[in-house]
Length: 319
Image (cartoon, rainbow, N blue to C red):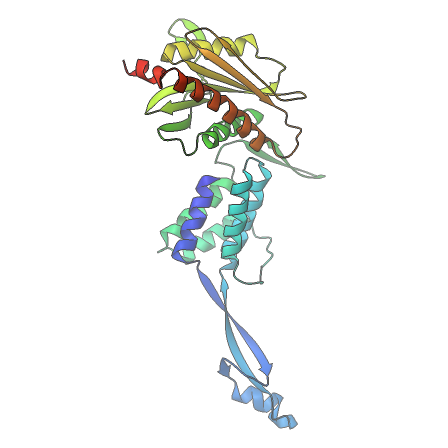
């Protein structure tokens, strides 16, 4: 999503490619290129002296780019992971490239559109990057979370719930920490790899999200894409073991709630485990409510750290 918006903004900043359409204009106030033979044939020969024929060039945004971006925007919006702000930005950017009312509906596949655009603007790296980004998204290479199946009754899109929930949790904690200096939120590179904590076994090192503070691991977050009324023992064991391995004091588990959202905290002096759950049934989109829960957890931790004298866990990690 962010890559697509950045690529779209770059093209707008450089200037969206355009094309000209020649349009015949019959009026009493001619503009553009005057067509004398056409005027004589159509008006003067019929005794009409107050009208003339002219040809006007009308500039339009390259409609192939408009069509390609519209398809991508609709698909990304279907993922439902975009925040309200991202959706508004995407709509505004799409309006920015649509500079005329002429929108060509085409049945051409996206690959054909992409090849035609790339061949038309080989000297525009911003356009080529946008096209490559659109192709990756439409081919569902961006996360591998979506699969499309076409049947006689229609076309269906299936989502990898695990990957979508991981991305949602990552986005929620990232947004919750936005504006706080020194923090970085990243998807863990070993997630899903089934790499054991110890050479002879132990829980897998595959928490989904790591929160860094001043360049050091500060919190581990695991996304659980199933309904739970309380933290499950296996999830608690996993994040506790990994937090101990990293010598950090904070861990979190993010669940789906069957009914009402809930939040809990427990642990010992070494590791505090925070759990939260939001219901996917509403009200409104799930992601903003997940962001709100993540913000409450993080504010509680940071307030406690501040009362205890600051960044104790990071200091110990540096040692």
